[in-house]
Length: 114
Length: 330
Image (cartoon, rainbow over all chains, first blue to last red; front, top):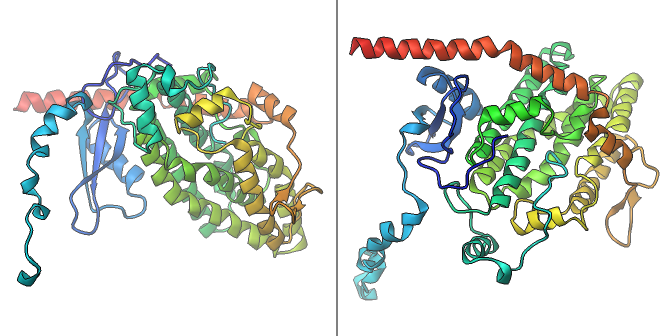
């Protein structure tokens, strides 16, 4: 087992591999849309030589019990992601705008449901 | 369990006061029930421990296909064959979910595979026992998957996000595995004399090894204490083993089968079943590589890896060729 690095990783949940071996298939992140009109949701990842195989493998690995009607496969290295260290600065602008939430406004009871 | 005897730093659990601020924040997040995600800071020991534990769990799912795969071509009916195939396919899936989770910690799939094949990483001791008759398919589903569920249900709340999410998926599917096993046992236990004998024989052989799956008592273990502080282990081995016996003993009674342990009976005072410890010398011997099937299992995995090499490399070459043809066309 290679000793894992403790540095934060570049992109997705999957760690960046320092030495990509020729024999290792690339990693794909899999997104599945369920039956009920929801959007695609990340379900996990898998290895595949190309996109076509990634979708076939995703069918076998992630939809054995009718979990989905649509599959997206995205090569993990193509995903950009925010990093946890930026959390403060990234989301801070939302924190001081409490008026964006409907509960900020008091509506008298006699007005009824709004 | 599927992950047995996982060693941590061995230094004992630090108190919050002894920790540097970064580690203290990490521990406090876990104490508060928060999740650790792949890109978050984590102590090196936590990362290494998780790689060992998740890796061993994944290997167990993969190697666990072998004793059951053994019966696919000999299943008694077409329906049983289809069910067993689906079950074994699920085990492959479980292995893949877990490898994915381990990979988020900075280890590659090939690294993990190589360490399994070389014997450096272990898999659960239970899969080093042979499956001699069709009744063993019942016993494996009922007892082995039953024991696995005991451990996996609480792990859905483990502190590491990707591991917890993999466990949620696995638990959803695991109940099918246990029930199909019990269904086989019911059929055989209520069948002819020969079938009942076969079912009893399977229980006799798998009872001890199933109890061993939880690992030896870890009440005194510093490794377990650290893993529990990190919430990558949720219950002590003895606690889970007791729960398993309490659940399984009445089921055996329902089947009209006898647990091969004369001391196994309900203790009115404690409300729990008393039972005898399995043969721990045998357990350590199996871990060392001396179980009935250790050599066969590793040989099978090595052969699959070696025989599949040209496929892995061929498909990669084909993908590269297609990519460059597409680029040339653009």
